[in-house]
Length: 233
Image (cartoon, rainbow, N blue to C red; front, top):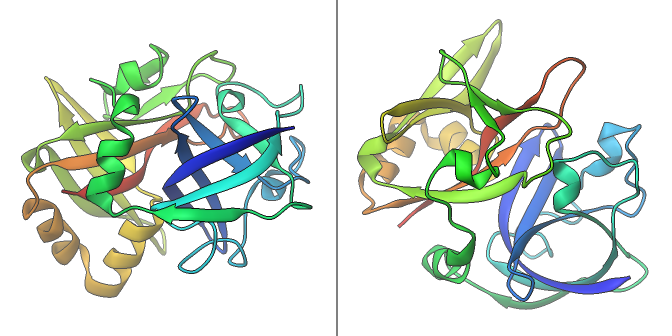
């Protein structure tokens, strides 16, 4: 068991459940706290519900929290096992501070990478469609960040059957990436105000801090790159 103190940087939404992550400034790495009952055989066990996530609760963007946690079980696969830990809920999760978006971006500067490939330690594969993934089992990071100019981001809505999903295209160098956006704040803004308002938020910024992560592998599918957060600075 060890003590962690992290700045909550990433909250992603999957129906009524949430995945959270943050920057551990003393260890200078990202950490993904998971419930103590998390199991590799039950995907739902690895997420948090609304009792722990959101304003006034420990897992809220910008909160600095302190908690006890243990390393992941040996059967937790990489790359996610790089950041996974199991929170000890018999002890309190203490909120010891809170940062605004601009303060977060400065505080986590040590975790910003020059490219998506660098963010995932060279394991990223980009296909012709612009989607990108890391193979399950890759020994590297599953969480990171990049910073881009507003002109390099295009947000759009993808319709698949009767479902609408938020996605974005990001230009980095000569490459264009097409990524899903499960970031909770961006999804909430889009659903409340529409895609044009969210895109205008981006255009009105001077730079965009993009939190990136990997989905967990599902069946034969690899770990797809996704956007875990958008900070318009």
